Length: 78
Image 1: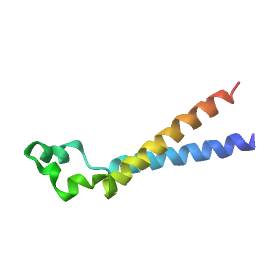
Image 2: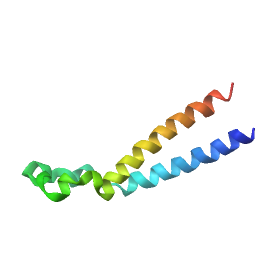
Image 3: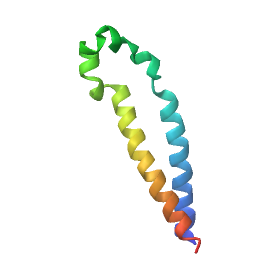
Image 4: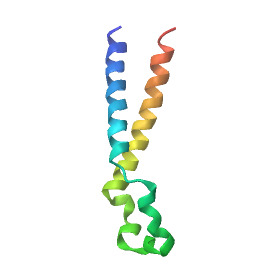
């Protein structure tokens, strides 16, 4: 019972974190410079090391944790 409560609290924190991180990310419309060749700039080449790239990675990891915790919390109901 205690473990379920702790997992539920972690699940809620992950939900809030995903929401905040997704809102912090730039929209896809900001990347339209690639059409004119702006993707070859320093910013375009190093996007994975930028703040936006880091937010994308964090979103992926939190998404995986979200799915795993949702499955674990659902299985533990039975």
